[in-house]
Image (tube, rainbow, N blue to C red; front, top):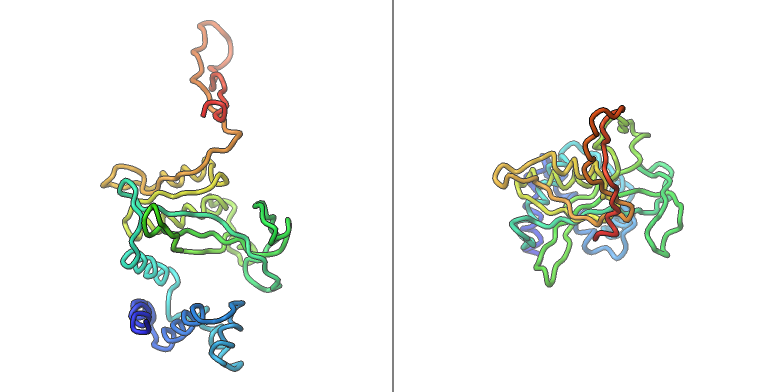
Length: 263
């Protein structure tokens, strides 16, 4: 087991420009695997019996310039595709995406904002302070026995105090950030995917972003979104032509149809 673990960690060594940074990365991964409780860097220090100097070294690792997070994430995604059998449907990988809210009490933590929990859970209050994370994962195994293996997690709210909020950029909307993560995975690895989302993402901006990148080989969008339609969705028949001689402009919509009644 230790030999396999070393070989898997050695896959990421090329992403670090310094040997010490890679060793710290290995120590952090081993902490995730073996620590009895995980509440942050403090838990890693307890596992390795580190003093205050070791605590600050681990903190500095996350801000180090000896590696690039985007390249490290791409290396992890390549490792997943080469070691885990992905579920394929009609020649496309199946990717799941969603948001999760994590309660945080730190006053100086990045991305900590006031959140409202809309899911039916008893473990969180209706309103709390925390972080909003977006996640995408690859479905591996088989359709009868599958498992979602995480590909990427990013904070999706709370960028204003960091100077990264741009109201004019449509990619910064909460619903489209998960689609952008799936697009990045599909483009970097040149693999078309089905992106399965819940009804929160059934908006026009999500579908426009998914259709903005096409696969030349398939002559289809690289990412196809599968989601549940909202109950208030409506459609319109084509408007009848305006009779000649009637004043006013041509009608834009015809008879309204409530989609829930039809399907």
